[in-house]
Image 1 (cartoon, rainbow, N blue to C red):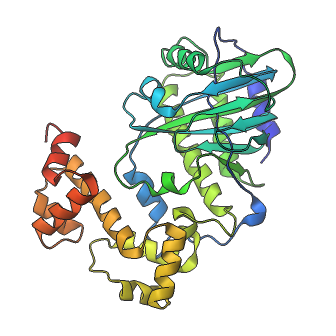
Image 2 (cartoon, rainbow, N blue to C red; image 1 turned 30 degrees about the vertical axis):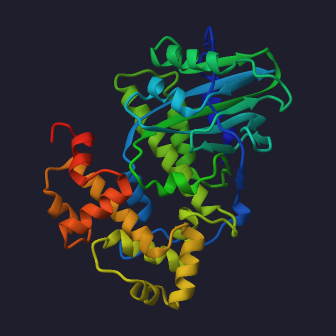
Length: 371
């Protein structure tokens, strides 16, 4: 990716200095890169499980800002649950991602080794852990968690500019775009669960779509127009989706998780079938036949890659679909059960309560009080 072209846009932007400036950025944990790329299978028979799952996690909002840090710089970010209600009040969970445009630094998550990042890296924090971004791994952060929360309050109140500056004014800083996506926490989150606590993805050469999205995003910093806020929200979501695709395409060969299962030709085919026809009366033998494998080999490979046995995955996905139908519609419980593959209302209710701890009717009342 041509980072310099994006940075040049920001160079045209006024370097506004916030009175108290904090940043969100991720840390370290798992590195993927172009050298590890494998063939990617996203869909079978026209069904795209990644899009299917992303639609079901229900993105509820997005915000982002640009950081210009000079040496020495550092920020400590608390767990997402402590700031989610500030930056995205309607979100039940916040996923953050950070795209490094210039310079370098270190990302640190408690209990994990410090990871160095540099221009061209994308950092993703999917699970809401606390973390720090620092110009060097040994230094104390310039801003602690209380100051970070104060920054979020000022930022979301509209009292800070799109570009925020921090640090001591020395050479050797960093510049990065920080994005935050809000989503619900309905029971099945295979994309979020598949990601490590902190993920670093290296942008691959020739990713024109991501480059254009970033250029457009940065251009909004110095060309204010009516409707910019809505445009920024959509751009933040699009960037995150493209980052997810890049992550899946560049996972190492030894990686496991839902994204790795989706990429595997045989397991990816089965995931596509389950998402395309979730109400069908699937059994293990039929799924193994569709994959062209023995029952034992298929079950072992599916479980190893996806993290669930095949039939448990199907049941869990059905419960996710049922939760959406109950929350978003007025269909009777029995009709919802039939739509996700249960011929008996009582069997559906038992499975739903086992997954959620409440009955379908109770879930609907909680999720949609006006239903």
